[in-house]
Amino acid sequence: MLAQLPTRNWNYSTAAHLLNRAAFGGPPAEMERLADLGLERAVSQLVDFDRITDATPDPEWAKPNPKRGEEMLAMRRASEEERRLKLREEQRLQRARVTELRGWWLQRMAKGPRPLQEKMALFWHGHFATSVEKVRDAYLLWRQNELFRRLAVGNWREEIMTYFETDMPVTNAYTESINRLAKDKNREGRGYSFEVMRARMLYTTKHKKKASTAKVSPFYKKTICYGLSDFAEELNYGVDLSTI
Image (cartoon, rainbow, N blue to C red; front, side, top):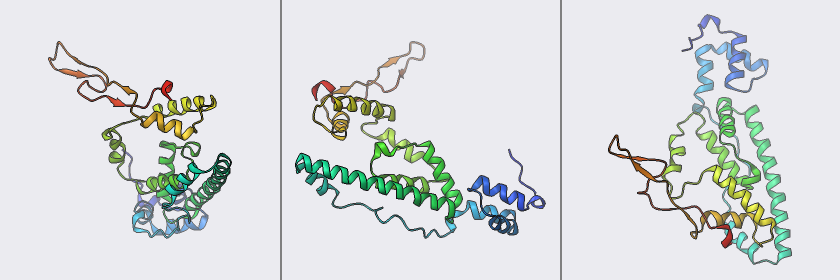
Protein backbone atom coordinates (compact mmCIF):
# COMPACT_ATOMS: atom_id res chain seq x y z
CA MET A 1 0.00 0.00 0.00
CA LEU A 2 1.35 3.39 -0.97
CA ALA A 3 2.08 5.85 1.79
CA GLN A 4 0.47 9.28 1.63
CA LEU A 5 2.77 12.08 0.57
CA PRO A 6 3.67 14.24 3.59
CA THR A 7 2.27 17.73 3.34
CA ARG A 8 5.72 19.21 3.83
CA ASN A 9 6.86 17.53 0.60
CA TRP A 10 4.19 19.19 -1.50
CA ASN A 11 5.80 21.69 -3.86
CA TYR A 12 6.04 22.72 -7.50
CA SER A 13 7.74 19.46 -8.54
CA THR A 14 5.20 17.19 -6.87
CA ALA A 15 2.37 19.29 -8.31
CA ALA A 16 3.88 18.81 -11.77
CA HIS A 17 4.14 15.05 -11.13
CA LEU A 18 0.47 14.92 -10.11
CA LEU A 19 -0.57 16.72 -13.29
CA ASN A 20 1.44 14.31 -15.41
CA ARG A 21 -0.11 11.25 -13.77
CA ALA A 22 -3.71 12.38 -13.19
CA ALA A 23 -3.99 14.64 -16.23
CA PHE A 24 -2.02 15.47 -19.36
CA GLY A 25 0.52 17.76 -17.77
CA GLY A 26 0.11 21.50 -17.92
CA PRO A 27 1.82 24.88 -18.24
CA PRO A 28 4.02 26.24 -15.42
CA ALA A 29 1.23 28.57 -14.27
CA GLU A 30 -1.11 25.63 -13.68
CA MET A 31 1.55 23.76 -11.70
CA GLU A 32 2.17 26.81 -9.53
CA ARG A 33 -1.57 27.19 -8.93
CA LEU A 34 -1.86 23.57 -7.77
CA ALA A 35 1.18 23.94 -5.55
CA ASP A 36 -0.39 26.99 -3.90
CA LEU A 37 -3.64 25.09 -3.27
CA GLY A 38 -1.95 22.56 -1.05
CA LEU A 39 -1.89 18.79 -1.36
CA GLU A 40 -5.45 17.90 -0.32
CA ARG A 41 -7.18 20.66 -2.27
CA ALA A 42 -5.10 19.96 -5.38
CA VAL A 43 -5.95 16.25 -5.34
CA SER A 44 -9.62 17.00 -4.64
CA GLN A 45 -9.81 19.37 -7.59
CA LEU A 46 -8.66 16.60 -9.94
CA VAL A 47 -10.47 13.63 -8.40
CA ASP A 48 -13.80 15.25 -7.47
CA PHE A 49 -14.39 16.49 -10.99
CA ASP A 50 -18.18 16.06 -10.75
CA ARG A 51 -18.23 19.25 -8.72
CA ILE A 52 -16.72 21.19 -11.62
CA THR A 53 -19.08 22.53 -14.28
CA ASP A 54 -18.25 21.33 -17.77
CA ALA A 55 -19.81 23.69 -20.31
CA THR A 56 -17.98 22.23 -23.31
CA PRO A 57 -20.52 22.18 -26.18
CA ASP A 58 -21.11 18.94 -28.07
CA PRO A 59 -20.57 18.78 -31.83
CA GLU A 60 -23.54 20.26 -33.66
CA TRP A 61 -24.37 16.91 -35.29
CA ALA A 62 -24.12 14.90 -32.03
CA LYS A 63 -27.83 14.17 -31.70
CA PRO A 64 -30.22 11.49 -32.99
CA ASN A 65 -31.36 11.85 -36.58
CA PRO A 66 -35.17 11.29 -36.65
CA LYS A 67 -35.07 11.02 -40.44
CA ARG A 68 -32.44 8.29 -40.51
CA GLY A 69 -34.95 5.54 -41.30
CA GLU A 70 -36.54 7.54 -44.11
CA GLU A 71 -33.15 8.32 -45.60
CA MET A 72 -32.11 4.65 -45.56
CA LEU A 73 -35.42 3.64 -47.15
CA ALA A 74 -35.03 6.28 -49.86
CA MET A 75 -31.53 5.01 -50.59
CA ARG A 76 -32.82 1.45 -50.98
CA ARG A 77 -35.49 2.61 -53.43
CA ALA A 78 -33.10 4.74 -55.47
CA SER A 79 -31.43 3.59 -58.66
CA GLU A 80 -27.99 2.02 -58.57
CA GLU A 81 -26.32 5.23 -59.73
CA GLU A 82 -28.23 7.32 -57.18
CA ARG A 83 -27.31 4.90 -54.39
CA ARG A 84 -23.66 5.11 -55.37
CA LEU A 85 -23.74 8.91 -55.27
CA LYS A 86 -25.60 8.99 -51.94
CA LEU A 87 -23.16 6.49 -50.44
CA ARG A 88 -20.18 8.59 -51.49
CA GLU A 89 -21.81 11.68 -50.03
CA GLU A 90 -22.51 9.87 -46.76
CA GLN A 91 -18.94 8.58 -46.57
CA ARG A 92 -17.55 12.10 -47.09
CA LEU A 93 -19.89 13.42 -44.40
CA GLN A 94 -18.88 10.72 -41.90
CA ARG A 95 -15.15 11.27 -42.57
CA ALA A 96 -15.57 14.99 -41.94
CA ARG A 97 -17.49 14.37 -38.72
CA VAL A 98 -14.96 11.84 -37.43
CA THR A 99 -12.18 14.36 -38.07
CA GLU A 100 -14.19 16.98 -36.17
CA LEU A 101 -14.81 14.49 -33.35
CA ARG A 102 -11.09 13.85 -32.97
CA GLY A 103 -10.35 17.57 -32.74
CA TRP A 104 -13.24 18.08 -30.30
CA TRP A 105 -11.89 15.40 -27.96
CA LEU A 106 -8.29 16.60 -28.24
CA GLN A 107 -9.45 20.06 -27.19
CA ARG A 108 -11.27 18.56 -24.20
CA MET A 109 -8.12 16.70 -23.14
CA ALA A 110 -5.87 19.72 -23.61
CA LYS A 111 -8.09 22.50 -22.26
CA GLY A 112 -11.11 20.92 -20.57
CA PRO A 113 -11.96 21.58 -16.91
CA ARG A 114 -11.89 17.86 -15.96
CA PRO A 115 -8.52 16.44 -17.05
CA LEU A 116 -8.71 13.25 -14.94
CA GLN A 117 -12.11 12.41 -16.42
CA GLU A 118 -10.72 12.82 -19.93
CA LYS A 119 -7.65 10.74 -19.12
CA MET A 120 -9.83 7.91 -17.83
CA ALA A 121 -12.05 8.21 -20.91
CA LEU A 122 -8.90 7.79 -22.99
CA PHE A 123 -7.97 4.74 -20.92
CA TRP A 124 -11.35 3.08 -21.55
CA HIS A 125 -11.14 4.06 -25.21
CA GLY A 126 -7.96 1.99 -25.42
CA HIS A 127 -9.43 -0.87 -23.40
CA PHE A 128 -12.72 -1.19 -25.31
CA ALA A 129 -11.13 -0.60 -28.70
CA THR A 130 -13.53 0.34 -31.50
CA SER A 131 -12.58 1.12 -35.07
CA VAL A 132 -14.28 3.78 -37.16
CA GLU A 133 -13.84 1.39 -40.09
CA LYS A 134 -16.34 -0.95 -38.42
CA VAL A 135 -18.75 1.56 -36.86
CA ARG A 136 -18.84 3.99 -39.80
CA ASP A 137 -21.00 6.46 -37.88
CA ALA A 138 -19.56 9.47 -36.08
CA TYR A 139 -22.67 9.88 -33.93
CA LEU A 140 -22.31 6.35 -32.52
CA LEU A 141 -18.61 6.96 -31.85
CA TRP A 142 -19.51 10.16 -30.00
CA ARG A 143 -22.05 8.27 -27.88
CA GLN A 144 -19.40 5.71 -27.00
CA ASN A 145 -17.03 8.52 -26.08
CA GLU A 146 -19.68 9.99 -23.81
CA LEU A 147 -20.15 6.58 -22.15
CA PHE A 148 -16.42 6.40 -21.41
CA ARG A 149 -16.63 9.88 -19.91
CA ARG A 150 -19.74 9.14 -17.83
CA LEU A 151 -18.19 5.96 -16.36
CA ALA A 152 -14.66 7.34 -16.22
CA VAL A 153 -14.11 6.32 -12.59
CA GLY A 154 -17.43 4.49 -12.16
CA ASN A 155 -18.42 0.86 -11.89
CA TRP A 156 -18.52 -0.96 -15.24
CA ARG A 157 -20.07 -4.13 -13.83
CA GLU A 158 -23.60 -3.45 -15.09
CA GLU A 159 -22.43 -2.42 -18.55
CA ILE A 160 -20.21 -5.50 -18.93
CA MET A 161 -22.48 -8.11 -17.32
CA THR A 162 -25.48 -6.98 -19.39
CA TYR A 163 -23.82 -8.79 -22.30
CA PHE A 164 -24.38 -12.15 -20.62
CA GLU A 165 -28.07 -11.43 -20.04
CA THR A 166 -28.93 -10.88 -23.71
CA ASP A 167 -30.89 -13.42 -25.74
CA MET A 168 -28.05 -13.78 -28.23
CA PRO A 169 -24.63 -13.00 -26.72
CA VAL A 170 -22.19 -12.61 -29.61
CA THR A 171 -18.53 -12.10 -28.80
CA ASN A 172 -16.27 -9.65 -30.56
CA ALA A 173 -14.21 -12.57 -31.92
CA TYR A 174 -17.35 -14.02 -33.49
CA THR A 175 -18.37 -10.77 -35.17
CA GLU A 176 -14.81 -10.29 -36.43
CA SER A 177 -14.94 -13.70 -38.11
CA ILE A 178 -18.36 -12.84 -39.56
CA ASN A 179 -16.91 -9.59 -40.94
CA ARG A 180 -14.20 -11.58 -42.68
CA LEU A 181 -16.68 -14.05 -44.20
CA ALA A 182 -19.01 -11.25 -45.28
CA LYS A 183 -16.18 -9.48 -47.08
CA ASP A 184 -15.23 -12.70 -48.87
CA LYS A 185 -18.79 -13.31 -50.01
CA ASN A 186 -19.19 -9.68 -51.02
CA ARG A 187 -16.19 -10.00 -53.33
CA GLU A 188 -17.80 -13.03 -54.96
CA GLY A 189 -20.50 -10.73 -56.29
CA ARG A 190 -23.61 -12.09 -54.59
CA GLY A 191 -25.16 -8.63 -54.83
CA TYR A 192 -25.42 -7.76 -51.12
CA SER A 193 -23.59 -4.92 -49.42
CA PHE A 194 -21.24 -5.70 -46.54
CA GLU A 195 -23.76 -4.38 -44.01
CA VAL A 196 -26.59 -6.54 -45.39
CA MET A 197 -24.41 -9.64 -45.51
CA ARG A 198 -23.32 -9.14 -41.91
CA ALA A 199 -26.88 -8.51 -40.71
CA ARG A 200 -28.22 -11.61 -42.47
CA MET A 201 -25.52 -13.79 -40.95
CA LEU A 202 -26.01 -12.41 -37.45
CA TYR A 203 -29.74 -11.96 -37.10
CA THR A 204 -31.65 -14.47 -39.22
CA THR A 205 -32.89 -17.74 -37.79
CA LYS A 206 -32.14 -20.42 -40.39
CA HIS A 207 -28.92 -21.61 -38.80
CA LYS A 208 -28.59 -22.48 -35.12
CA LYS A 209 -25.66 -23.49 -33.02
CA LYS A 210 -26.30 -25.97 -30.22
CA ALA A 211 -25.22 -25.12 -26.71
CA SER A 212 -22.30 -26.91 -25.10
CA THR A 213 -22.92 -30.19 -23.29
CA ALA A 214 -23.32 -30.71 -19.56
CA LYS A 215 -21.79 -33.71 -17.81
CA VAL A 216 -22.52 -35.41 -14.47
CA SER A 217 -19.52 -35.90 -12.24
CA PRO A 218 -19.26 -39.45 -10.77
CA PHE A 219 -17.45 -37.98 -7.77
CA TYR A 220 -19.60 -35.02 -6.81
CA LYS A 221 -22.94 -36.48 -7.98
CA LYS A 222 -23.97 -33.25 -9.54
CA THR A 223 -24.02 -31.64 -12.94
CA ILE A 224 -20.90 -29.87 -14.12
CA CYS A 225 -21.52 -27.47 -16.99
CA TYR A 226 -18.90 -26.80 -19.63
CA GLY A 227 -19.81 -23.44 -21.09
CA LEU A 228 -23.56 -23.33 -21.70
CA SER A 229 -25.56 -26.27 -20.38
CA ASP A 230 -27.95 -28.56 -22.25
CA PHE A 231 -30.80 -26.99 -20.34
CA ALA A 232 -30.44 -23.83 -22.39
CA GLU A 233 -32.33 -23.47 -25.64
CA GLU A 234 -30.49 -23.48 -28.95
CA LEU A 235 -28.83 -20.16 -29.62
CA ASN A 236 -29.22 -18.32 -32.90
CA TYR A 237 -25.90 -17.32 -34.44
CA GLY A 238 -27.02 -16.48 -37.98
CA VAL A 239 -27.60 -18.22 -41.29
CA ASP A 240 -25.46 -20.73 -43.12
CA LEU A 241 -23.45 -18.96 -45.80
CA SER A 242 -24.52 -21.52 -48.37
CA THR A 243 -28.14 -20.37 -48.04
CA ILE A 244 -27.44 -16.73 -48.86
